[in-house]
Length: 99
Image (cartoon, rainbow, N blue to C red):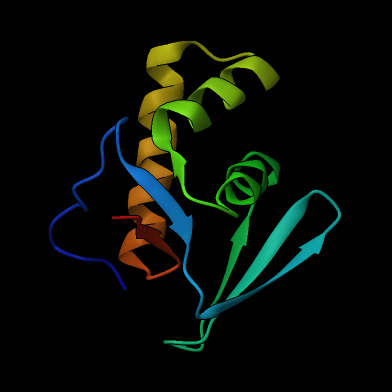
């Protein structure tokens, strides 16, 4: 399930995990059950790290900083990848823009 338009998310957006999901960590990966659509979604270790940062409303810029420090990735590549993942998670109803 994806939206035809990408979510309006920028480095200045604050995001948080949606409440209508259940997450289980398996090693360094995560499995998420969406209670809205009954679908399971998986996250690799970097996606799991990003997911864990969304346990409270957090600015995308801050998330990118944490990922840049923990992994060998440049700012532009990191921002592009993080924003793409977050837009996908929003489109699936797993993450919400915090107002």
